[in-house]
Length: 125
Length: 464
Image (cartoon, rainbow over the protein chains, first blue to last red):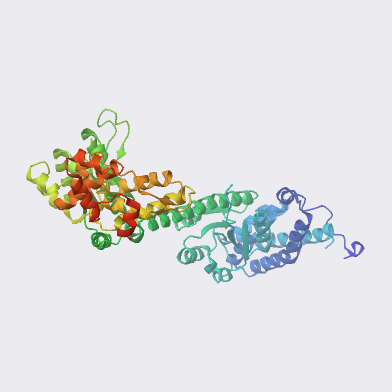
């Protein structure tokens, strides 16, 4: 794909960093790009499901999805939502106030989508 | 350096991002053969491939981690399972470890290193286990009756039948026989062909243990129970738990100790020296002796009650001289084995060498034959082992002659042949030494009862 065709993300501040991945996989850029590609193709869809699950108050599903997404958020150092994803993960537990979870899910969804856009831009995907 | 076999690693993870990272990371080791699965069902359909290690995501969409672990343990019990979870829940982790998981790893930035190290450790365990299995198979083969019992004589075939009967049950076995007849080998063979074969075989030579230490050796002791008991130590009975305890040279046991042994065998329990605690025992007993225990009972040196307790299935190993042509079959076995182990060309016994072996009484039995054959293999320059290479001269030739029952005429022939061999077939000298008429010897030569040209005569008269 041609670089000129890429749309620059609305949020210019980079919401992730790849230091952890680079530390683990060295300078194997090709592999890091393949991970970015997986992220772009799977995570926005998962975060959309997360929002839908909070809307219908399916807290078990919210927990499961958050649990699944959490390690990637940590590995990509997406610090702005690390606490939020943990709050969603605890949705199924009774001690959590579920009133705020829909709001949190929307925020997580937005950040995940922004990161996807930023990755597309960085790696020309 | 050890040549490592490829390690089959299955990654079961529905998160494509995470499974790709794991796959990439583990692929850095070229010895790992990796397969990825994103559902429990796709993984279970390939479980028959018996992976060495599985990394299992605890939260799969189609089956929970508990159920999946259970299925792995049921269908592929040797597969090592590493549970990978996003939850730092100690209770869940402990529960899974109790259910058979080998490791529980939380997804975080150190996961990959931990998985790497865990798999390396598991691999060492797997390799050790495989080595143990191989060794067990080797031991099993080594003590297979067919490999152990070499010989076609009726006497040894009867032993073979008795050993098979002994191996099938838990009955106490008493093995008797002259020194060198293979009593311990028979005991081991019964053990390694019995249902107890995967448990310990513990041999104790009662003649080699000082009288004062025997109780502690057999039953163990508590710390401080006697001078030198610096720590608690279990005895041979406990060491042989669920296995076999072989008490060799039981006839040498002190009469006081016999009472304690009798109690242990009757009650199936022991008490360590210096302790009051009763320890239940589950061991199969095989005893051996070269002595005549019934005679010892008669003269009061062996307890009658213990005698009947240990008699069980008696196996009396015949001496080599009563095993017909087995001496030649066993000699060939030792010859082949020794030559193979020492990179020597395969050797054969010449006809007169065979005759010499058959004529010898072998007071040291198979053990003596083994040493005679090994020396002959070293001494013989060519492929053929000649009679002169066989050092079977008994230190007491009269005893040697007497061991093998024979008629007076046979003894006479043996005697004269021995002197002829000794004095290089000088008939006159032999006649003088034995104070017999030279004509007697010449007549025996003429009748082919004795020989002065052994090679020629033996080829003519001995064809096996």
